Structure formats: structure tokens, C-alpha cells
Length: 179
Image (cartoon, rainbow, N blue to C red; front, side):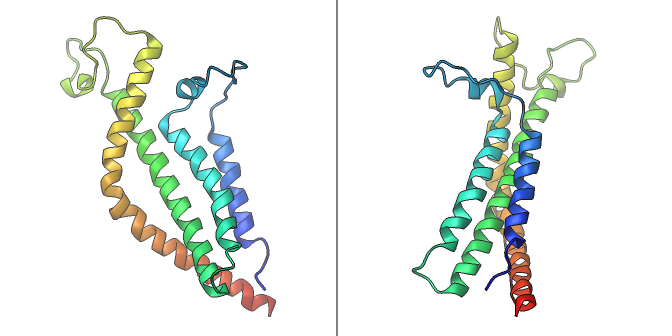
């Protein structure tokens, strides 16, 4: 018998933290206008939503997989939770960081301003404030995705292994305490 609440409390804690960093959003009542997501959520925030959804659903599916023995199921649940937490954390941080970097390097060229600060300034005649915000978010997402090609192997894989082992150790310790 597993100790109820170890993983459940951890998941609830992650969900509360995720909800606290989400931006306020007013949903459109027009069902033909799903574009509000693009204007209110950056790719980092969208990744956070996907991660929170995965954290709620995927471990449940793994836990109820009766085609494998209990030990394999426990490892599968812990590995799934670890992959979701590590992948979501690095994905959000890298995307938000890249968007901030692009924002700092997208200033209009001016005398005395370093060239690096205008490196990503768009070469267009007219651009609205909303268009410029979309440009920065898009460029930041592209830069973030390129960075994640490296971090998937350099960061995600080792930290997923460490967290999986830690969760398994906690889970087994909880089982021994109940015996």
C-alpha cells in the first residue's frame, strides 16, 4: 500500500504555484475568436498550462495501467512526474528568459545606444504596440526553442533522472513507514 498524499501534495503545490504566476485574462464571449490566447499568454505561459495539465492527467493514467506490475507502475509514475516537472520548468524559464532577452535587444536605434540593444529591432515602416509585443514574443519563442535543443540533453535528462530517483526513494520510504 502506498502512502496517500506524497505525490498528491507535491502536485497540488505545483498547481498552486502555476496558478499564482498566470496573467489575468478576460475570455472573449465570441466562440469564433480564440485569438485572445495569443494576445494574453506568451509561449512560456502556454507551456506552463500544458505542464500543469500533464501533471494532473498523465501520472493518473500511468498509475492505473494494469498491464504492468506494481513496481514498474511506480517507476513509471515517478518518471512521468519528474519529466513533466523538469521539462515544464526548463521550458518556461528558457522561453520567458528568451522573450525578456529579445525585449532588451529590441530597442529602437538611437545615438549612443549599443548596437546589441537594437539587434532584434524589426526593420518595418509601421508597427503597432500590440504588433511589436507579438514580434518580441515570437522572436523570443524561436530563440527559446533553439536553446531548448541543447537544454533537453544538457539539463532535462540529468535532472529528470535525479528527480525520478528522489521520488522513488520518497515513495519507498512512505511504503516502509506504513508497514
